[in-house]
Image (cartoon, rainbow, N blue to C red; front, side):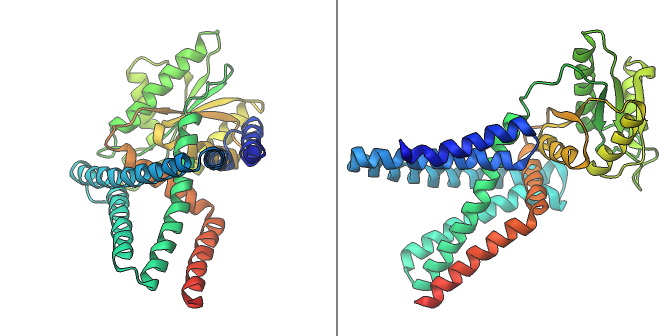
Length: 334
């Protein structure tokens, strides 16, 4: 059972991290490492007990992983085409298509290396697999933990429900994406009000260059027009980013109640990064998500992952550079 010790240690680190602050990305990495080491330990034990069976299981897992990559590549390309058709050709909308093309390119490189079997091509393919494996591992950690975080229970006590803005249509109208946040905020507010508390619903969003009024005001008008009490709505109308949404909202909440607690509402794909940002700026609250159109979700999740990857760019780019240098060293030593 000693072989399972690394998995147990990483899982304990994950549990401690969640208890200390569930909004850390390190929690996602610890959980991913625990799963990887647990799988590796299980395979080692299986090979020790029955070498032929163990090797067959390893081969089967590799085949399943390869098929999974092929299916994922096809799905991302198809989703990318759908995004372009429905949302336009902005860089953010191309992410799932680019991801699918990158996976197709990786598979083509591996096939070429297998067929041609030249030293240079084998080293290039091996380095590409190492880089893709590292990025893919982080992405799976992010997806898995974001899924878990999004299903954590809301605190029973909250003085504010903060809704993050996301842009207006036609300069003044609330689009469906933002409307879903507002409707989720109303549901959260109703749930928190069952115990007799009346949290303030704080709409957060400034005025963009192509908008006729601040997002916060359009959001507040949307709520009041649908019967939400105007006296329970407050506006934060200066922010231009998620960080500013949370930082300026924090100032409003702290000024009114230094011991405040809040629930932050955004879309489900944005929940974990918003939670990480809320931790960085010192907001005392939990983040929940509203539903997003299924076709929009893959590109949105990739965009969120890229933002988190770049937030830790020194570490991530350093590891990627080390993998590239390792590949170059292997090639040079031949």
